[in-house]
Length: 121
Image 1 (tube, rainbow, N blue to C red):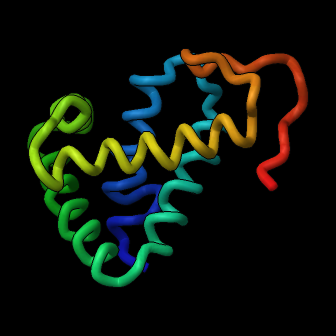
Image 2: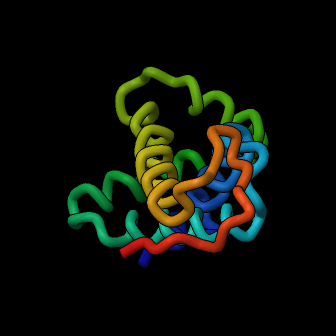
């Protein structure tokens, strides 16, 4: 497992910040579960894809240190550049599917209903 693809690595930091921006009312515990899920799935990618993702995340990690987490996330959030634009799309795809499969009553802003946790069968 690459350090870049862990919850506290570049991918996890990016996913956490992206979800904070796009789903501002999502509870911290749910966001942490979702980031862990995204990172776990990223580590299960086939080797050639995972190598590419590690390289992209290494660059993202450098940008996070140089420009800051918020600036890097906002830049990538709207990016249409090949490869770099795929990172936020991958995170959104995995995260949104996990959130709405596990907690189907989640609002578009991330607010949770008062019902119990759903099943991610």
